[in-house]
Length: 55
Image (cartoon, rainbow, N blue to C red; front, side, top):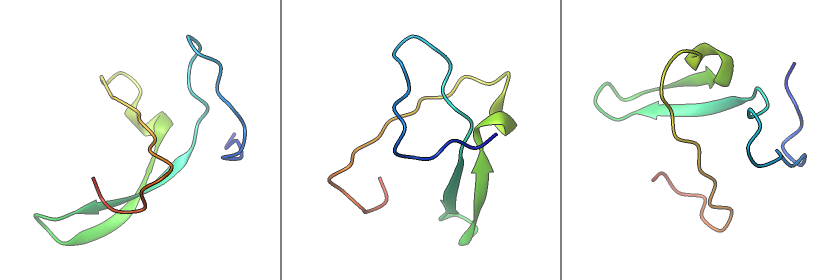
């Protein structure tokens, strides 16, 4: 289930499943990734709402 982006995720609970746009500069390809595709891996999620550039 994909949750709308406007919904807040409670601190300390699992994040809601979402789809994000990706870009891989080494191969110059774009795509999408789902949070559930990363189950079992260590990941870091962050959000900086004032910047719309690649980090």
